[in-house]
Length: 94
Image 1: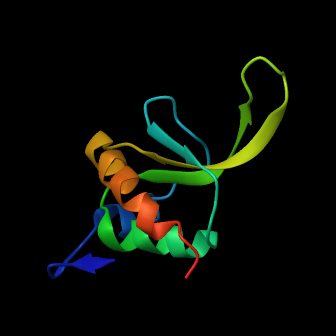
Image 2: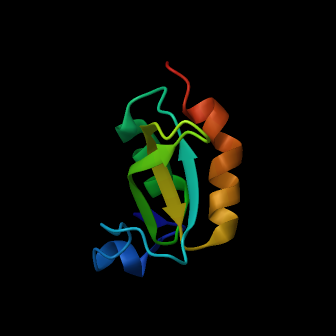
């Protein structure tokens, strides 16, 4: 919550994690390989902008079947890129 001795205003006001997925957020969909708390704790600690973390229903092309995936979406697109790069190591079972 406090980084470099300055509190994040979004954390203080309770506005950092949103409960719905806004259309302008950049989404990273993935299958979970670890517990969700590990992923959200990493987001809280290493990133600064608003984010969404929840379930998303993905369809398989051509078959009409779907499955449930996790979605991490970020208002700052560079944070989504950073998260996607770290996700391979972060999403492994420890």
